[in-house]
Length: 144
Image 1 (cartoon, rainbow, N blue to C red):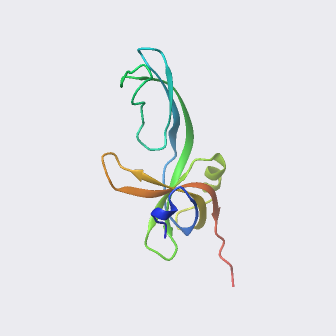
Image 2: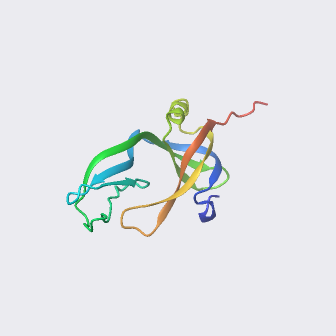
Image 3: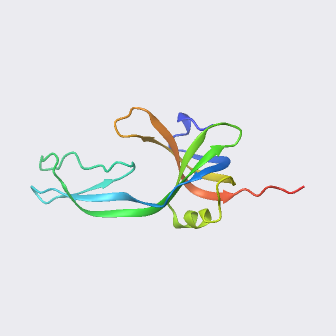
């Protein structure tokens, strides 16, 4: 079972694919311009909600204009951990992993390696543990 002690660490998850989500585009980095001084502020995006800079070096707070973003293509799957009733969201954001996903269907046994992160819903103090996959493979059952 994955717990808080696994946060920001690499884990291996063996389980069954419960659901395959639709493809999406996620902003990974955004650059904002201060309208007062023209300073460029880069903000890494780790959550679903877009984070803006809180303050510029000139003292301005808020009202920044986003002018450039870097994004990545992704898709998510939900995996029920083998031997438990717990399910985890697994985010696949590498093109190689998304190609592998085309061969996997709901109900398939998979092995996922990835980094555990916490994801909070907007305005909530309760977060979900999610896995950002670095490796995905379909488990082949041995025939007797």
